[in-house]
Length: 237
Image (tube, rainbow, N blue to C red; front, side, top):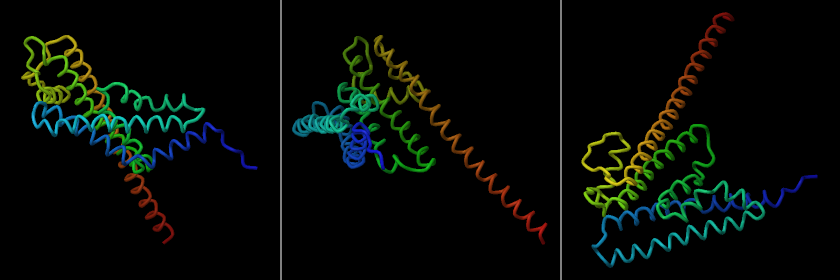
């Protein structure tokens, strides 16, 4: 007789099916969230009607994300601890405002095109994830630096555009020096951005090298097989 799955496994299965169905809408919603959020940073104080609409839209999107999380939590049933542990970034992104841009990473991992696939598809997913992680890291760090620097005495990072430029220059190790943090929290954030940049570059490089090695190995294997087939034909001929 076929053994019945435990309620916990049934709950996780329901969660995964729900995540498959809602992956694309929530991913597009997270992109819209970051886009609107960025627009409000760059247009603060102008176009008050559109700015009011944008600010009103952000909480609605957040409520959508939060509702999705608690729906899945309810579906998990008795295995809620496992659900919370394996989806900690979902919860952290909802609780901490400065982590909300990372919702893009949360939802892109659910997309069916990346969730199931060959080894090459998985590598593409990792490279895309690390690239998005790098952009979101720069975005979040720049936002935090802007918050702690904009009112500081002698600060030159006084708007989000300057902070974003500083963030990309820092993670790329260019270091123009035109914008620099002057506060202790700002400098601490700068160090974490530098470390995160080294980590991201290292992971992408390792993944690309692994892909290149696999292709070289497969090409060498095909050449070997053709050579053996030719030698076999010569011997039998």
